[in-house]
Amino acid sequence: MKRTLVHATLLTAMLGLPALAQAETLRVGIIGDPASLSPPKITGGVWEEDVLRDLFAGLIDVSSDGQVIPGVAERWEVSEDGKTYTFHLRDSKWSDGEPVTASDFVFALRYAIDPSNAATGAERLYPLVNGQRIAEGEAEPDTLGARAVDDHTLELTLSEPAAYFLKMLVLPIFYPLPEHAVQQHGDDWSRPDRIVVNGAFKPTQWISGTELTTVKNPEYFDAENVALDGVRYFPMEDREAGITRFRANELDVLRDFPASRHTFLQQTLPDAVHITPNLGSYYYTFNLRDSQPTADQRVREALSLAIRRDVIADQLLEGAVSPSNALVPTSVSDYTPQPQPGLDQPIEQRLERARELLAEAGYGPDEPLELTLSFNAGTEQQRIAVAIAAMWQPLGVRVRMNSAEANVHYANLRQGDFQIGRAAWISSYDDPQNFLQLVYSAGNNYGDYQDPTFRDLFARSNVEQDAAKRRELLEQAERRLSSQFVHAPIYLYTARNLVNPNVEGWQDNALDIHPARWISIEAQ
Image 1 (cartoon, rainbow, N blue to C red):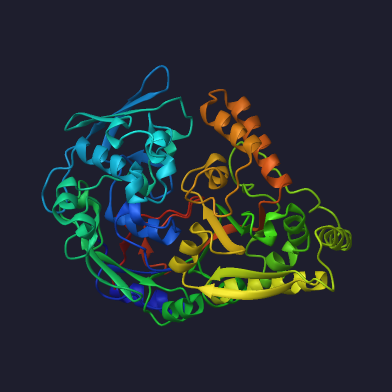
Image 2 (cartoon, rainbow, N blue to C red; image 1 turned 135 degrees about the horizontal axis):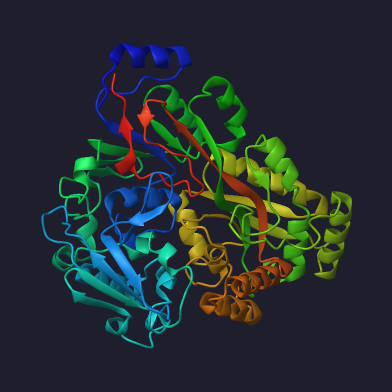
């Protein structure tokens, strides 16, 4: 590795950037603590996937520029009918020296689909034979379409062909689990002092809310090409504090800096700012359960119509994001997002229609609509919530704010303990299916949307092999979703990261995925 002490020091001084620490340990500020280090037990947060991607290696991996590449599976074949995937595994080991086998993948998939384990993202396994039946308690986990032919050969069988299946294998729910460690320690197997991993780094210490420390895993199959000694992850729900720490040379990377600080950072740290369009949607989700005011579509439509997305994106967030009128982002390939009706009208017309809808629903000066707006803690989330509450005020809507740590907030959403909740989805693969499944599967269907027409269209799209017909089914499904105002889309994400220029191997990409195995540090 190149060592240019004088050059690196002069470079950082001229750019006004913090110099990096001497040790080749990457210090990363992430949005929050992982809920767990066990892949099936995370909440689905992007920050959790960032961590687990460094700790575990799945069948499929992601290159530094976001492309799908072989992982533990060095090659694979797909049957002519598109239902059977056969993966040939390379020789690899767990961090305790035990071999990683096809049985570890089968064990992980059965564990995840077993309803008694309440795995987040289990619905991603529904394409496998008996996947949904097992999750709903109608079949046993050992009937899942996953079979270890031998230690190095894994066979996955789908009920129907699924064009998107291979892309999904980058998700943590498909990571292997060390069966020997889980059987020895039960749910405690993933404690830092017991955890066994097969990725590029292994945890050594975890102080909740403060720091997760990892070191290079010498047993990783590609360890010889991993440059870093380790990675330290710092939960930074206060993104302003994250910027301060980056500027003070306490972080080498800050993930997802606040959009509202875009202009300031471009002016003060231009060579550290990385902004690129990505596959992400920021939205408010409505609770559709019968006991909630937002179960009434007229209420949902009125609230969505009154939101001035241009003000939020262009003024509050300084143009670092784009206004959104649909759930699926415009950056998704080969797809046309289907907007909510009426959002293209002038704001005066939208407000007039919103007042009519609320009056029809029984709300007005004598019967004001009172709602609780829930969001995860952070200056930016609060600013957006306050702005939207102010936009609803002319309608006579009274809003109570409910802020909580990210893990608590999303747990509340999954339990249906909210009325209106801030949510977001940043896709790990480029397909509209990954966004529309949010209201099809149980884990992320926070509002309990159960429309038969949408579900039929989405289910048919999952098995359609003709690309044009599949696209039309997905667009019809989103059109149905948008017409019922299940969400209030607000803006489309951009990937926003602060990266010290001495961090090498970082490549901006639409997935905003940056495995630390590809990163190195130009030492001083």
